[in-house]
Length: 398
Image (cartoon, one colour):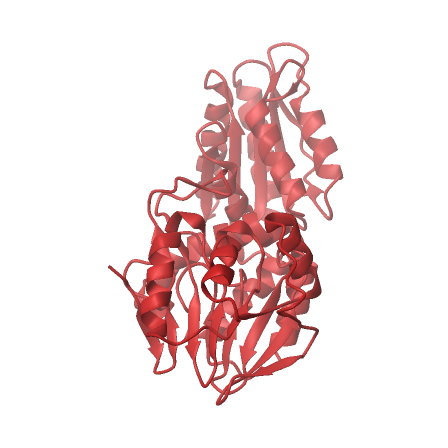
């Protein structure tokens, strides 16, 4: 049975949810599934904005068929060529042999790569600020390279003041009936998964995101329609401000992430004691992660959110405890920068994790390592507890 949602009289949501998926991009946990958003404009000409993942392809095609109600499809706009959005392109071309395809120059090269299709006879190659008139609506195209693939563009409907934002302003999670962000508890239900989506999927490309934000700041936007997650129609400045902070690697608020890697529990005890001492000094936002238990995507998200980080790691084969090393490489790979960082190491002999962590941090931009070396030998001692007191003061003052 089809499932179509009306956004306006001439604009329909024809996307679908995948609640069976467990990991997005086969790596990031998505316990609440994923939404794959697609939109159909019913003007004098009909316009499809992006397809969906093959996992929900059957429902998408049924939605499209019912929504068109016997009309032909005139245009297909391809904003992003990642397979969770482009998987149904060949099927659309088969069903609608006269459809024109609009995309950036790089889009058509990727269509050739993925599907072996040459669309020269039906391609509309869009450049910055090119427009497409569909009758009552004029669509303007803005290039958004590396947000988060090189071919990406976004589409601004000058008539309705709607921005179709591709992967920008998306979120992990299926859409639970409510199509609009303002129908959710934003801070509790939406923002954490929007942040985790941004930081892990787009987070490396802050400079490019800021360039896109600069472009859209010149537009009069009343609605933002992403390819994942709820549609934004209220308080757009709130979401744009969040994106501006994330893209500039600016902490959203003061707080401390304590990530620990502990084999037999002794490093964990040090992390817990540190958290208690910080709380006693009046720190409110403290989050603790066992790197062996939590997927790095969750920890990375909070590292973007807060201004101070603590890494407490056992030494393992004279190296960093492997799950901790994985986290640090994720932070480096996503351009994490501009944080105050404390390091705690543990080792029963030849402790090396602190030195190795500092070497990795030195490869990141503006990571200020606090000058207090705590090296635990197997288990905490009274002297180690005193050293933690000194470290607490440095963290509080950072």
